[in-house]
Image 1 (cartoon, rainbow, N blue to C red):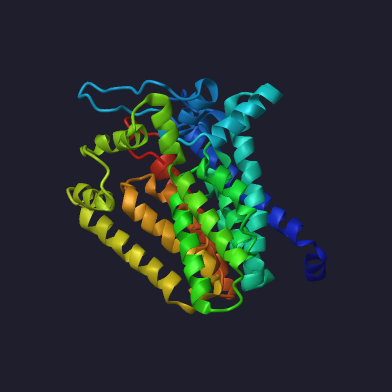
Image 2 (cartoon, helix red, strand yellow):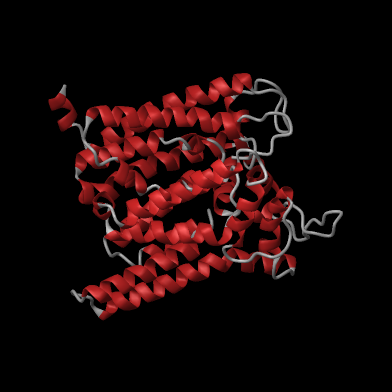
Amino acid sequence: MVDLLVRTPWWQRVLAIFVASRIVTTALLLWFASRQGPNPWTGAHPGYFDFARIWDAHWYYIIALTWYPSVLPVTETGAIGENAWAFMPAYPAVVRGLMVITGLDFAVIGVLVSVAFAAGTSLLLYRLFERLLGPGTALFSVVLFCVAPLSPIYQVAYAESMHTFFLVLALLLLQNRQYWLMIPVITVMALTRPSGLAFALALLLHLCYRWWRRGEFPWRERIAIVVVGLFSAFMGVAWLLAAWFVTGSPTAYTDTELAWRAGYGFTGELVPFEPWLLGAQFWLQFREGPLIVGLAVLLLAALVWLVGFSRAGRRIGVDNRFWLASYLLYLLAVFFPQSSTFRLLVPLFPVLGIVAQPRSRVYRIAVVVAMIIGQYLWLQATWLVSGSDWTPP
């Protein structure tokens, strides 16, 4: 049996892990669908595909069918209301194209696209970690990616699978110093989920690191990094410019994003790093507030220590650490902490390379079991709709 496993090509082992994990996650989604009552998107006890297209998936459905509005909705208070500009165009564009080609509806195509990109991400993730951590640890990193608490998001009509695929590909190209090939990858990545500015910062850190190391650093590579970094920064604001061009409002995108914050009682302009202070103010009004805020601070401190100072953190490679630091800083600067923040942590997947390093069989089994339990808890807390639910995934 062991000899057979050794002789099996790496990509077959990765795909076998992916398929096995999808069986578990599909079973969980079906079980929760059987418990789902009537809600704004479906009737009671919806089928799998209907259950997989609720919450923000409905916005992607609207975009796939009607694209983006040229006139922003205005609420009774005169503020900009929730609308499709909050969601990037790459994923719904791909889904719409396949809908036209196949004649299948949004829910089916949306799920199939997500699953296909998730499978591809698993393959790329193995390649990203194989050289850094060795084949065994790289394979267990894939296991953790496939069973992570938010891994159900990889098989619903959300853009996370597609974004993660292009992000892993961009990091793999950065690791291999294939800078120019990153331009088309960054283009799609930044138009799938907001990430262009964070990746530009990671490229700046990469440039400074290579300069500081004083190793072989040809001018052609320096120029390539600068150009690609500037391009990534531009892609980080490209969607803001597109929203401005179509609607005529220079703040169309940020006003749209802030519309979701209004549900928590906060209005005003986007001020960097203020959202987390406002979030602490909001959560502290609840009885469990001090515990929630305290756990968030401890989690952030643990993450900083793991990535920046631990021996295991150093083993995942300097570029992966640069990305983790850059994206975490980006999250702290612009996102308001609430239930969907867990989904926004998906791009921090290189941390799984740290968690995967201990070789104890008991440890690894325990981590996998804990993560599958985490899937259940995340689906229960966010995906399952309960009455006037205010905990979107």
